[in-house]
Image 1 (cartoon, rainbow, N blue to C red):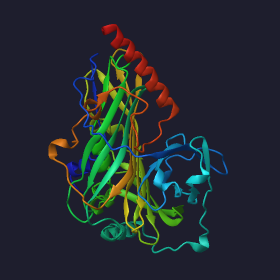
Image 2 (image 1 turned 90 degrees about the vertical axis):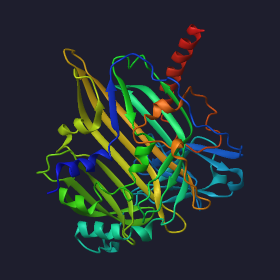
Image 3 (image 1 turned 30 degrees about the vertical axis):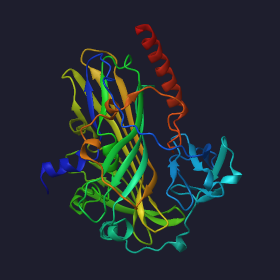
Image 4 (image 1 turned 90 degrees about the horizontal axis):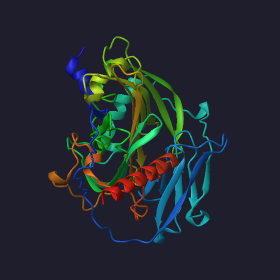
Length: 436
């Protein structure tokens, strides 16, 4: 068995560190955003909802992109989406892809500007068509890691991504912040750090509701790129971590009209440390890792607070209720896979000593890559980059306006987020008016 310090390294790089503290101060402060003006490009804005054709239920986190390009977005947790198509691409097709569904392509010309309803057909893989290489899931994972240089880029890329971070206190949103990011993604076959730069950002927060606990997320956008499990594999995909988990090959599933092995894993019962359980999806043809869905295992959840909480008052008890993670990769026209969508959700119950009631905080961070290029790739200056110890909401400017994103693709906010932001902004405007 490895040391406790090694076990800890399997966790801290994966979770978003939380800061809980007392006080009624606003943390707006002197926030500056790294904003630049982008040349205006004419585009067609297309919005709608993705639904399951058989159940008529929303299909969450669907990859939506212009066919033949890397321009895209994902649907939100209500199935809603919005994608901006340059006018010179108006003869193109919009592709829709999700785990367990058949791919669908729709002509831009056949879509309305809003209120589109896109139905995806569930895809079942007949057992007769399943090609099993081996029944040993660990061998499959070892081969998948050996194939990384063949399946992923061995040259650096620059990417554009959308990032959103929300904090909910019980049922009420108390903070929403989001940004367009510029990414430098190093080659997958080299020990080269990725970089994140905040290109344009904004926030809206209700400090009044959080006047007893100031709840913040540390890491933010930097955590998203750190969750690229093929660049930082020392969690569930590191060969050295295999001994801490039980793995099981449970079947096959259709993703992007391709067969995928589904490997289930959970931490072993004798591991006295908070680790994970979940599913790993491997492309059956080339063993590329296409998706990883995982969460804090119940076997170590009661020990997770020491890892998740960076700072808190002694009289405040914090109990993790769950930590959920999604990492999705997409294959481009060159046959190479790249990081496409990352989502994390942490749920924490907070209770003061000698107080009857508790509060539950739900923190969600999400990043979707909306475009990428492997030409004229440049690194950023160190002072421009986001760091793992940064608090994102402290580094972007205040206030929300409807035309903020201009030509950028982004993840359509859920209606509950839009309503919350409007209420927060109204309250903020009243406060600003009373101070004038």
